[in-house]
Image (cartoon, rainbow, N blue to C red; front, side):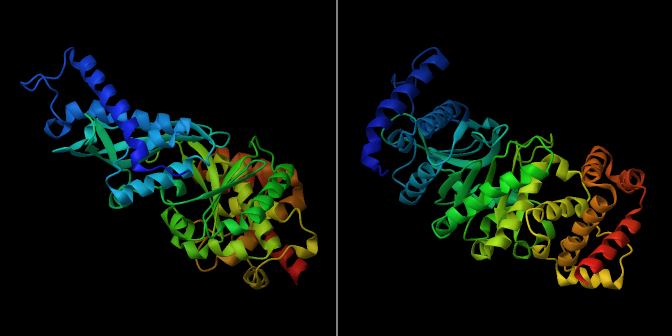
Length: 424
């Protein structure tokens, strides 16, 4: 949809000027007074006076997006700033592709600064993807506002501040970064860009199939719905908090929890999504499908996954990922085979799991889970997961020994024995 600045002006005059004047009258109990009977323009107002006008334009911004009204949305933005105006057209087109549930913008009045018609403030962006997020995701953004030259209100003049985002460790979703292409399937919301969209059909199809395969194996109350980011650049991957190993190019994909409130410490998670490294979009379809099943296992386990030692979390994900494959296609890294032949006396530690030996660590962790299933049956694997997830991190070794009647060192040796017997 293409909307010009001229299209937006009638909405701006009618909606903002009239509503802001009415709001001022309601707040003060009289018409504004600057000695002439006319309301002072925003450039002569303090922050306390401007805050209601900013709230009003943010309310209109959210309302127009929920209604899919491009002209009304652009009427809330400073069209006289061409680069920002262009970015807002992209933002509108992006959001129109998403299954919007709740969408609101809330001003933090304590952050409002500025004068002479130019203001900046922190805004809470509440956005819920219907069917995918349990609750709205609250993202902090630093907005800029300017006086409306055609009326008596304020306009949005900026909705990002990259330097502020870096300082405050704010993760910006793809739809607020640049143009996206959305492709959907049963239970799948795929976020692509112009370059990666050519692989959208293959990726969405693999995720659809993987959802069914994972749900057959993993006991959980997961809805079976997932958001996957499959972009052509690593910018989004680099921006994720607590990236395993810290090197985005060392990972083929990553599942990550989306907290309901960025920077919050209440532990509420809106959803778990996963992101594919760009190189995986052109990988062998069977390798990609296995990787997707691995990440979907993390998604299915949800918050339980966060409370596990890394060897068990990644081991279970690897174990689930191969269940759909014939045994002769269940490949393991040569590094894991070499370590098993040399002898193992411990399971991979959390601290360096994704370090230089990560290829071996994934294989060893997978076969520790294979050993548990071989000795005790599949039910014991899920029992161990529940027992460890319910306990304290400090007690994990004791819980493992009490549950399996094996120490972690003994389990490592059982894994090594089976790797050597299978891959020789």
